Length: 309
Image (cartoon, rainbow, N blue to C red; front, side, top):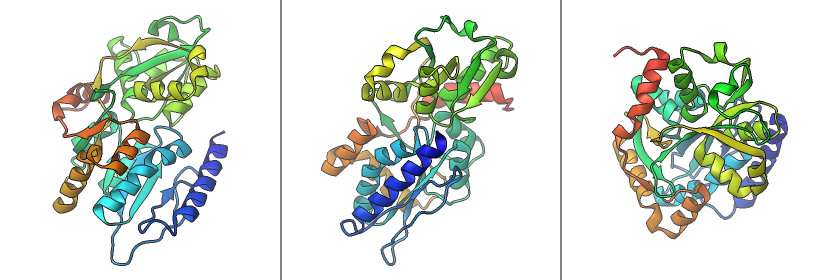
Protein backbone atom coordinates (compact mmCIF):
# COMPACT_ATOMS: atom_id res chain seq x y z
CA UNK A 1 0.00 0.00 0.00
CA UNK A 2 2.83 2.41 0.89
CA UNK A 3 4.51 1.88 -2.50
CA UNK A 4 1.20 2.46 -4.34
CA UNK A 5 0.70 5.74 -2.45
CA UNK A 6 4.26 6.71 -3.35
CA UNK A 7 3.94 6.17 -7.08
CA UNK A 8 0.53 7.88 -7.18
CA UNK A 9 2.04 10.87 -5.39
CA UNK A 10 4.98 11.04 -7.80
CA UNK A 11 2.66 10.97 -10.82
CA UNK A 12 0.58 13.81 -9.43
CA UNK A 13 3.69 15.82 -8.65
CA UNK A 14 5.03 15.50 -12.18
CA UNK A 15 1.62 16.39 -13.59
CA UNK A 16 1.41 19.43 -11.33
CA UNK A 17 4.90 20.66 -12.21
CA UNK A 18 4.16 20.32 -15.92
CA UNK A 19 0.86 22.16 -15.60
CA UNK A 20 2.35 25.02 -13.59
CA UNK A 21 5.58 25.48 -15.49
CA UNK A 22 4.29 28.27 -17.71
CA UNK A 23 2.06 30.02 -15.20
CA UNK A 24 4.27 30.36 -12.13
CA UNK A 25 7.59 32.28 -12.10
CA UNK A 26 8.81 30.24 -9.13
CA UNK A 27 7.84 26.57 -9.43
CA UNK A 28 8.79 24.33 -6.54
CA UNK A 29 9.79 20.71 -6.15
CA UNK A 30 8.25 17.77 -4.35
CA UNK A 31 10.87 15.41 -2.92
CA UNK A 32 9.27 12.04 -2.50
CA UNK A 33 10.68 8.95 -4.18
CA UNK A 34 11.27 5.47 -2.72
CA UNK A 35 10.79 6.17 0.99
CA UNK A 36 13.95 8.26 1.49
CA UNK A 37 13.32 11.19 -0.87
CA UNK A 38 14.91 12.27 -4.16
CA UNK A 39 14.68 15.24 -6.49
CA UNK A 40 12.02 15.02 -9.20
CA UNK A 41 12.67 18.26 -11.10
CA UNK A 42 12.91 21.97 -10.47
CA UNK A 43 13.28 25.20 -12.41
CA UNK A 44 14.78 28.16 -10.56
CA UNK A 45 14.62 31.81 -11.38
CA UNK A 46 18.14 33.07 -12.22
CA UNK A 47 19.87 34.65 -9.23
CA UNK A 48 17.16 33.65 -6.79
CA UNK A 49 17.97 31.14 -4.07
CA UNK A 50 15.00 28.93 -3.19
CA UNK A 51 13.31 28.88 0.19
CA UNK A 52 13.47 25.24 1.26
CA UNK A 53 10.39 24.13 3.20
CA UNK A 54 10.62 20.77 4.97
CA UNK A 55 7.52 18.78 5.82
CA UNK A 56 7.19 15.33 7.37
CA UNK A 57 4.49 12.99 6.12
CA UNK A 58 2.18 13.51 9.10
CA UNK A 59 -0.42 12.60 6.51
CA UNK A 60 0.36 10.52 3.42
CA UNK A 61 2.61 11.92 0.64
CA UNK A 62 -0.17 12.79 -1.80
CA UNK A 63 -2.29 14.46 0.87
CA UNK A 64 0.73 16.40 2.14
CA UNK A 65 1.51 17.69 -1.34
CA UNK A 66 -2.09 18.73 -1.97
CA UNK A 67 -2.29 20.44 1.42
CA UNK A 68 0.91 22.48 1.18
CA UNK A 69 0.84 23.50 -2.51
CA UNK A 70 -1.15 26.73 -1.97
CA UNK A 71 1.14 27.75 0.89
CA UNK A 72 4.22 27.33 -1.28
CA UNK A 73 2.64 29.42 -4.04
CA UNK A 74 1.86 32.16 -1.51
CA UNK A 75 5.39 32.17 -0.07
CA UNK A 76 6.97 32.25 -3.54
CA UNK A 77 4.97 35.36 -4.42
CA UNK A 78 5.30 37.06 -1.05
CA UNK A 79 9.07 36.50 -0.70
CA UNK A 80 9.75 36.89 -4.45
CA UNK A 81 11.80 33.72 -4.67
CA UNK A 82 11.33 30.09 -5.71
CA UNK A 83 10.18 27.67 -3.03
CA UNK A 84 11.10 23.99 -2.77
CA UNK A 85 9.10 21.44 -0.83
CA UNK A 86 11.33 18.88 0.88
CA UNK A 87 9.19 15.97 2.02
CA UNK A 88 10.56 13.13 4.10
CA UNK A 89 8.77 10.21 5.76
CA UNK A 90 10.10 10.78 9.30
CA UNK A 91 10.50 13.67 11.71
CA UNK A 92 14.10 12.64 12.37
CA UNK A 93 14.91 13.28 8.71
CA UNK A 94 13.17 16.68 8.78
CA UNK A 95 15.13 17.60 11.91
CA UNK A 96 18.35 16.54 10.19
CA UNK A 97 17.60 18.74 7.17
CA UNK A 98 17.14 21.71 9.49
CA UNK A 99 20.15 20.86 11.66
CA UNK A 100 22.49 20.67 8.68
CA UNK A 101 21.12 23.74 6.88
CA UNK A 102 19.62 21.75 4.00
CA UNK A 103 16.20 23.24 4.84
CA UNK A 104 15.29 26.78 5.90
CA UNK A 105 11.97 26.19 7.63
CA UNK A 106 10.13 23.11 8.82
CA UNK A 107 6.69 21.97 9.89
CA UNK A 108 7.24 19.52 12.74
CA UNK A 109 5.41 18.06 15.73
CA UNK A 110 5.99 19.06 19.34
CA UNK A 111 8.08 15.97 20.05
CA UNK A 112 10.46 16.68 17.18
CA UNK A 113 10.64 20.36 18.17
CA UNK A 114 11.68 19.77 21.78
CA UNK A 115 14.30 17.27 20.58
CA UNK A 116 15.86 19.83 18.23
CA UNK A 117 15.47 22.64 20.74
CA UNK A 118 17.36 20.67 23.39
CA UNK A 119 20.20 20.05 20.96
CA UNK A 120 20.28 23.73 19.97
CA UNK A 121 19.28 23.59 16.31
CA UNK A 122 15.55 24.42 16.36
CA UNK A 123 13.63 27.48 17.45
CA UNK A 124 9.97 28.42 17.17
CA UNK A 125 9.00 30.71 14.30
CA UNK A 126 5.18 30.77 14.39
CA UNK A 127 2.40 28.46 15.50
CA UNK A 128 -0.90 27.74 13.74
CA UNK A 129 -4.23 28.45 15.35
CA UNK A 130 -6.84 25.86 14.39
CA UNK A 131 -10.50 26.10 15.37
CA UNK A 132 -9.58 28.91 17.74
CA UNK A 133 -6.98 26.78 19.56
CA UNK A 134 -3.18 26.62 19.65
CA UNK A 135 -3.32 23.23 21.36
CA UNK A 136 -4.32 19.71 20.34
CA UNK A 137 -4.54 16.20 21.80
CA UNK A 138 -3.34 12.67 21.33
CA UNK A 139 -6.26 10.30 20.79
CA UNK A 140 -6.16 6.59 21.59
CA UNK A 141 -8.44 4.91 19.07
CA UNK A 142 -9.71 1.35 18.53
CA UNK A 143 -12.08 -0.26 16.00
CA UNK A 144 -15.70 0.59 16.70
CA UNK A 145 -16.61 -3.05 17.39
CA UNK A 146 -13.56 -3.68 19.58
CA UNK A 147 -14.09 -5.22 23.03
CA UNK A 148 -11.52 -2.72 24.40
CA UNK A 149 -12.89 0.23 26.35
CA UNK A 150 -9.93 1.81 28.11
CA UNK A 151 -6.17 2.11 27.75
CA UNK A 152 -5.44 -0.74 30.16
CA UNK A 153 -7.41 -3.09 27.89
CA UNK A 154 -4.69 -2.66 25.24
CA UNK A 155 -2.26 -4.79 27.22
CA UNK A 156 -0.97 -7.64 25.06
CA UNK A 157 -2.45 -6.12 21.89
CA UNK A 158 -1.02 -4.89 18.58
CA UNK A 159 -0.56 -1.12 18.58
CA UNK A 160 0.39 1.47 15.94
CA UNK A 161 2.66 4.47 16.46
CA UNK A 162 2.99 7.10 13.76
CA UNK A 163 6.64 8.21 14.15
CA UNK A 164 9.41 7.72 16.74
CA UNK A 165 9.58 11.50 17.42
CA UNK A 166 5.84 12.17 17.28
CA UNK A 167 4.29 13.62 20.42
CA UNK A 168 0.69 12.55 19.81
CA UNK A 169 1.72 9.48 17.82
CA UNK A 170 4.17 8.02 20.35
CA UNK A 171 5.59 10.21 23.15
CA UNK A 172 2.28 10.56 24.98
CA UNK A 173 1.81 6.78 25.06
CA UNK A 174 5.41 6.25 26.20
CA UNK A 175 4.85 8.71 29.04
CA UNK A 176 1.49 7.17 29.89
CA UNK A 177 3.13 3.73 30.16
CA UNK A 178 6.05 5.09 32.18
CA UNK A 179 3.58 6.32 34.80
CA UNK A 180 2.25 2.74 34.96
CA UNK A 181 5.74 1.28 35.36
CA UNK A 182 5.56 -0.13 31.84
CA UNK A 183 7.13 0.38 28.42
CA UNK A 184 5.77 -0.29 24.93
CA UNK A 185 7.85 -3.47 24.84
CA UNK A 186 6.46 -4.81 28.13
CA UNK A 187 2.87 -3.67 27.65
CA UNK A 188 2.02 -4.35 24.02
CA UNK A 189 2.40 -7.67 22.24
CA UNK A 190 3.61 -5.87 19.11
CA UNK A 191 4.06 -2.30 17.90
CA UNK A 192 4.40 -0.96 14.37
CA UNK A 193 5.16 2.43 12.81
CA UNK A 194 2.86 3.71 10.08
CA UNK A 195 4.71 7.01 9.48
CA UNK A 196 1.53 9.01 9.06
CA UNK A 197 -1.50 9.62 11.24
CA UNK A 198 -3.97 8.89 8.46
CA UNK A 199 -2.24 5.53 7.91
CA UNK A 200 -2.61 4.80 11.64
CA UNK A 201 -6.28 5.72 11.53
CA UNK A 202 -6.91 3.45 8.55
CA UNK A 203 -4.94 0.63 10.16
CA UNK A 204 -7.35 0.76 13.10
CA UNK A 205 -10.42 1.09 10.89
CA UNK A 206 -9.31 -2.02 8.97
CA UNK A 207 -8.52 -3.85 12.24
CA UNK A 208 -4.91 -4.33 11.13
CA UNK A 209 -3.99 -3.19 14.63
CA UNK A 210 -5.98 -3.19 17.86
CA UNK A 211 -5.30 0.44 18.62
CA UNK A 212 -3.26 3.53 17.76
CA UNK A 213 -2.38 6.95 19.10
CA UNK A 214 -3.10 9.74 16.64
CA UNK A 215 -3.16 13.51 16.24
CA UNK A 216 -6.62 14.87 17.09
CA UNK A 217 -6.40 17.48 14.31
CA UNK A 218 -5.66 14.89 11.64
CA UNK A 219 -8.34 12.58 13.06
CA UNK A 220 -11.03 15.26 12.96
CA UNK A 221 -10.02 16.47 9.48
CA UNK A 222 -10.01 12.93 8.07
CA UNK A 223 -13.44 12.18 9.49
CA UNK A 224 -14.77 15.38 7.95
CA UNK A 225 -13.36 14.32 4.59
CA UNK A 226 -14.49 10.69 4.94
CA UNK A 227 -17.55 10.59 7.24
CA UNK A 228 -17.95 6.82 6.77
CA UNK A 229 -14.81 6.28 8.87
CA UNK A 230 -16.57 7.59 11.97
CA UNK A 231 -18.72 4.47 12.28
CA UNK A 232 -15.63 2.26 12.17
CA UNK A 233 -13.63 3.97 14.92
CA UNK A 234 -13.96 4.71 18.61
CA UNK A 235 -11.90 7.04 20.82
CA UNK A 236 -11.17 5.45 24.20
CA UNK A 237 -8.86 8.13 25.62
CA UNK A 238 -7.94 11.76 25.04
CA UNK A 239 -4.68 13.22 26.33
CA UNK A 240 -4.33 16.60 28.04
CA UNK A 241 -3.96 19.48 25.60
CA UNK A 242 -0.46 20.08 24.20
CA UNK A 243 1.15 22.85 22.17
CA UNK A 244 0.11 22.50 18.54
CA UNK A 245 2.71 21.29 15.99
CA UNK A 246 4.80 24.42 15.26
CA UNK A 247 6.70 25.98 12.39
CA UNK A 248 10.43 26.05 13.20
CA UNK A 249 13.76 27.30 11.86
CA UNK A 250 17.41 26.91 12.73
CA UNK A 251 18.49 29.66 15.18
CA UNK A 252 21.31 30.60 12.78
CA UNK A 253 19.01 31.19 9.80
CA UNK A 254 19.69 34.57 8.18
CA UNK A 255 17.89 37.16 10.31
CA UNK A 256 16.47 39.06 7.34
CA UNK A 257 15.01 35.88 5.85
CA UNK A 258 13.72 34.72 9.22
CA UNK A 259 11.90 38.00 9.83
CA UNK A 260 10.46 38.12 6.30
CA UNK A 261 9.24 34.54 6.57
CA UNK A 262 7.68 35.14 9.98
CA UNK A 263 5.92 38.27 8.72
CA UNK A 264 4.65 36.49 5.61
CA UNK A 265 3.12 33.71 7.70
CA UNK A 266 1.64 36.05 10.32
CA UNK A 267 -0.03 38.16 7.63
CA UNK A 268 -1.49 35.31 5.53
CA UNK A 269 -5.00 35.92 6.80
CA UNK A 270 -4.88 39.48 5.39
CA UNK A 271 -4.09 38.30 1.85
CA UNK A 272 -6.53 36.70 -0.61
CA UNK A 273 -4.07 34.04 -1.76
CA UNK A 274 -2.91 33.58 1.82
CA UNK A 275 -6.46 32.95 3.00
CA UNK A 276 -6.88 30.25 0.35
CA UNK A 277 -3.65 28.61 1.52
CA UNK A 278 -4.83 28.72 5.12
CA UNK A 279 -8.08 27.03 4.10
CA UNK A 280 -6.11 24.21 2.44
CA UNK A 281 -4.10 23.79 5.64
CA UNK A 282 -7.26 23.93 7.79
CA UNK A 283 -5.56 26.72 9.77
CA UNK A 284 -7.32 29.87 11.02
CA UNK A 285 -4.09 31.88 10.98
CA UNK A 286 -0.53 31.80 12.29
CA UNK A 287 0.36 33.45 15.60
CA UNK A 288 3.59 34.42 17.40
CA UNK A 289 4.84 31.49 19.48
CA UNK A 290 4.63 31.12 23.25
CA UNK A 291 7.41 28.79 24.35
CA UNK A 292 5.58 27.91 27.57
CA UNK A 293 2.88 26.15 25.52
CA UNK A 294 5.35 23.30 24.89
CA UNK A 295 6.45 22.84 28.50
CA UNK A 296 4.36 19.70 29.04
CA UNK A 297 5.93 18.08 25.97
CA UNK A 298 9.40 19.01 27.25
CA UNK A 299 8.57 17.47 30.62
CA UNK A 300 7.28 14.22 29.09
CA UNK A 301 10.27 13.94 26.75
CA UNK A 302 12.70 14.55 29.60
CA UNK A 303 11.20 11.73 31.66
CA UNK A 304 10.79 9.27 28.80
CA UNK A 305 14.25 9.93 27.34
CA UNK A 306 16.06 10.37 30.63
CA UNK A 307 17.30 13.88 29.88
CA UNK A 308 19.37 15.42 32.63
CA UNK A 309 18.70 19.02 33.60
